[in-house]
Length: 98
Image 1 (spheres, rainbow, N blue to C red):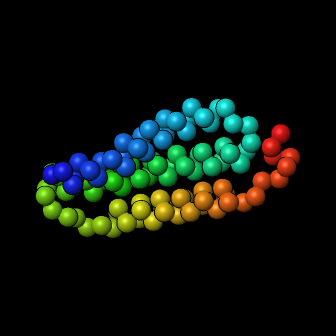
Image 2 (cartoon, rainbow, N blue to C red):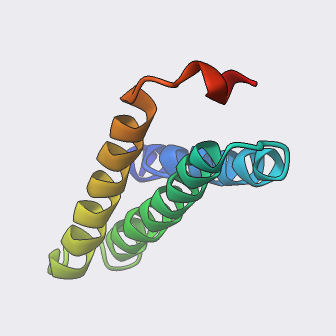
C-alpha cells in the first residue's frame, strides 16, 4: 500500500507544477517561453491521467490491467517532455534577452 501512495507523488508534483506554470504564463513575454510553458502543462496533465489510471486500477482491483491506454498516454507524455527539452536546449539570440 505504501508503494501505491508513493506513486501519487508525481501526481502531486504535477499539480503543483501546473499551478506554478499557469501563474508564470501571463508574466512571460517571449512566444518561445509561452510555448514551453504550454507544452509542459499539457505533459503534466497527461502524466496525471496516466498515473492515476494505473494507480486507481491497482488500488481498487489489486491487479494490473491492459496497458494499451496508459502506454499511449506515456508515449505522448515522453514525446512532449523531449520536445520541451529540445526547445530549451536551442540557444537563445541576444535579441531574446531584451
